[in-house]
Length: 281
Image 1 (cartoon, rainbow, N blue to C red):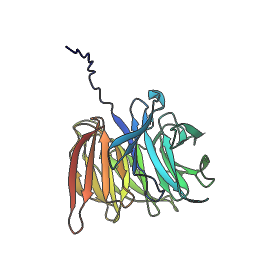
Image 2 (tube, rainbow, N blue to C red):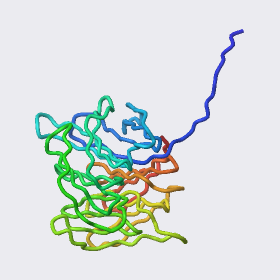
Image 3 (cartoon, one colour):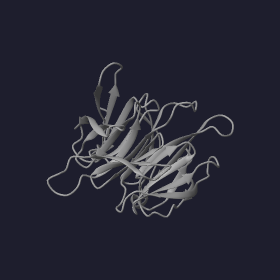
Image 4 (cartoon, one colour):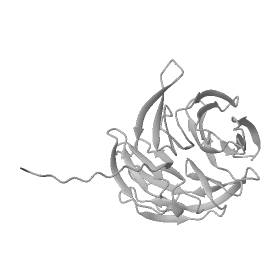
């Protein structure tokens, strides 16, 4: 008789702090960058949903926000992966080894969110400002250039669309002009019985739309011209900490404290349709 000894370990899901979908055009398979609340950084293949690589981290330096940059300044297009967190530093990672290659401190305190437009990286900071970091030097180059004063309290999230900055603070999303630093509109979120709704994540979508994830577990879609709510989804059982959109803006992923990633898709000629994969990573 053959005896086999097995050991079963209880699975302990770890919350997701940040998500970022790699843009197409770099000649690599589709990738999803995931930042865990324990500080770990992971790269997933979004075609097979297999884990490609991972790096252990420190919970004190966990990646609160992740962004991909498609760098085509010299030679063939290359992907750059950049993160930031409450430790107040912006870090660029080697996408093959997941080792840090450059770090920059913009000086605004804790960094809650990142967004990229062209060769500029925008960081939502604890002092209520948006700090701008130049990426023009290519891979391994991060240089602080200027700041935009947006609020008197901390900014938890931001997104860039056209020439406007959308920032989440004090239960509302405000729209600011990058050129004039003037507030052009605001969107008010639902309020809980006590306190304010925390807007953990913002991401720009196609057709002048914006997605938000908040402390009520809601994913909401907004019209950025009229500044009104278009769609409301309640798929999560806890705070939605991270949102990521595909390059064409037609696919949206959300993740948060419940360790669940939900997918939202948009069909041509119809309204947004929720495609809940029920997939946990």
